Length: 250
Image (cartoon, rainbow, N blue to C red; front, side):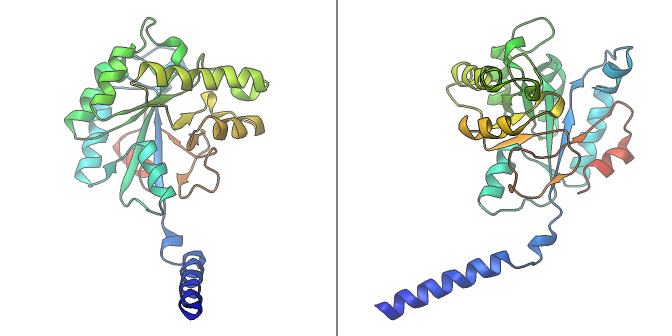
């Protein structure tokens, strides 16, 4: 019996050692997480609004690129769950959409469905139901269509400018409202408005049950060593298909 236990422990130790050694897995390039804001034919005249708006024809060309190059779309939650289980998605990308504008339901989601793709929509709960923003009904329909709909704060405030009480109200309020109005399922991913966070934020994400939070730091997601500081790549109005190909290449 003692010998069996010794051998079992030795085998486990060997597995852990192998898992920690540099290997082919260590060179895995990771998964790009792309950041959109609006997909809309109406392009604002101001420089910032224009930069944040991808026209539907351009977005559809990007989805065709993914299909033609056999790059799968997964949600942010799926990516986090896979990494937590030691799985490394191959030829995959996460498409995220910030703020919760109405075009997420009327333009982006129909195009995603047309190409058998899925996206993650980070929504500020305080703007739900206001002009030009999503409604709870639309968000429930998006979830039913296979999209991830999750948190982007309550009033889109920069968390790094708030004290603990303010951050708890801003982030915790969003998580609570989503759990209440979207079928009782609490969000597990989060995107920081303006990509900003501080030490209080990192502690709060864990307390809220968030498993992965996203910044605006460029890069690809390769592990969950810092699960609340994950990178994203911004998609801009003027990005052509060639540039998009670079963005989805780890």
